[in-house]
Length: 112
Length: 116
Picture (cartoon, rainbow over the protein chains, first blue to last red):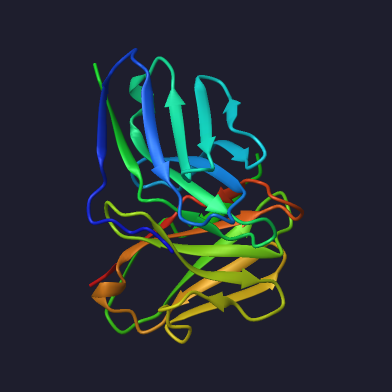
């Protein structure tokens, strides 16, 4: 079901370093996964997606890895910048349901 | 990408009154829209799926008489929080997807509701 945590885990990284944000998804039937970035007071912004027939997908400075065996998703951000500071959510969906279930979220803090 | 617009972005209302939030898909037709609720430092919780021309589908634990959803056209869904109370204060976010297959969902900018 939906993951609702009392506290967002925080990842602090130095500017210029790579960031890795992890997510465990809940439904083994999910076959579409998305990473969103949410800045304070704003709605989620699409970053990258991946379908279950893939285990890796790359975008500009971002890479998503999918491990269906352990139901794990990760987002890698290369050369992290101050503008990357935000909360990152993974979301999972089952084809045809149009329903997204969001993970707990991770706050990324980029240190200058 | 497609644009989803939410209005208002912020609203303060008195306890006991009702508040309507609008969600519009600006450049595509959305037969299905979704309403989420987000408490501070928490994830998005799906409240309901809004279906154009038919009744909304509510998630378990969400009161349909409390959160009225209307999806009268292919570009507009509304969420009305009826008889609002302070515990209804939250960030409400809508999303919409373009028809066909698994595609990314586009989110509105959210509405911060404060009930005093």
